[in-house]
Amino acid sequence: MNDLKEQSWWENSQGHRVPSDRVKPEDKMKDELSRRLMAGAESVQQVIRQFKKTAFEETLAAQQLIFDQYGAKVGGAGGNISFRSYDGSIEVKVAVNKTTGFGPELGAAKALIDECIESWSEGSNDNVRALINHAFQVEKGNIDTARVLGLRQLDMKDEKGNPDARWKQAMDAIGNAVIVKGSATYVRFYKREPGTDKMVGVPLDIAKL
Image 1 (cartoon, rainbow, N blue to C red):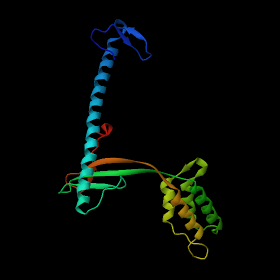
Image 2: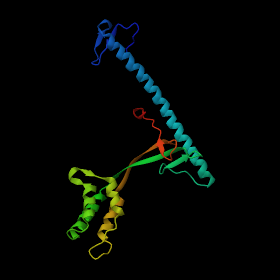
Image 3: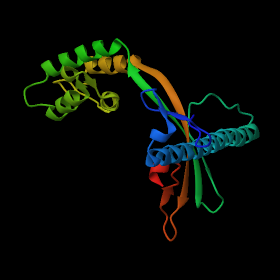
């Protein structure tokens, strides 16, 4: 670390030692400023990290108290929970976001879906064809997870108006293909906007302040 007092040389970005009298005053000023602000940022980071830890601990403890009233046990981080102030003006949300992907079963699902498309008469189910094409953009190397899962909400019929067995089989394959790669837990804070019923987030990201 460069020390402005009693320093005979400075280390530059290439790792070279530069005599102090050859370092421009403005460079020394920028060095001092950047180090001082970084120290402040790291201090704030520690405060936020500790606050996050405290928030998780206290919301989990509150959840446990509520579960205890009903003789239930708090499970893993599988769901979301919210806490509101009595007047409803403040809300604290603990949210679990899961990252999902697909296993090899998805290939079987796509093959079955292709069979369904081939069996449909020309011009029928055009909207569904578009949804499928958007979900499986295989030629671009993309698979839209939300859209693929959304296909399971469609109740497709065969040419005779009966439930399409291949479609159901494909949707079952999609369900079996889902893999939870990981999850992340977040705590978010909201307060009611004065004079309205709108709840607005309280940003803790310095870029949004």
